[in-house]
Length: 266
Ligand code: PGA
Image (cartoon, rainbow, N blue to C red):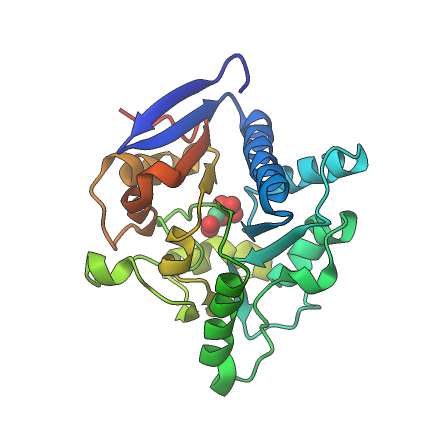
């Protein structure tokens, strides 16, 4: 924890607040690497869930730096990414497989056959089976020791988008092929060179697998997240704001925020 940091609690969840994006990323990286090292020490391996987007980039840069300094190894790590556009080639620079390769996998000692990202080239007929299989692999690996999450401006976690389903149903969504929410597509439009070019569907891990992780680190930075973070932490648990569903596993959840993202908290 940086000296200027604060520790809060909301809905039974720990909330760490750091001054800025850099210190927040470092703090999140530290918590994740602590979890990796604890799992490796305990049972010889760690199984981690990884996220993409702009928020985790500095976390991965920190991992790469620690790896170069021989302070962090991924030799005994198996990873599962939350989501992938569909359909997309892994070689497409906008694919999350490509993002992970650029930001982390290429630079560290993770075994390529243990760094899992949904396959955006699977024929559509087989997409549901592929999604279900991904979940079974996680279960067969003993479940996730730690899951890294970001939060979308609309409150999504992975590509579990806001919806009107019952809260009970929202808590046990399986891995599946989904349509992206208009807010998600609008946010992605810069990456795709225009709203009409955004790939409108994705394969995503469901809430069931995410909430089953033994620990969850959710990271948000910047004023653009302040409102949605406040609603997820201080509002009711609702399928309309998927990140609020983390309240159901409060003991396992740590939010890591910068002051800007925490600025809407009461
Ligand atoms: P971002 O995405 O890190 O690019 O803001 C977060 C998310 O959509 O989960």
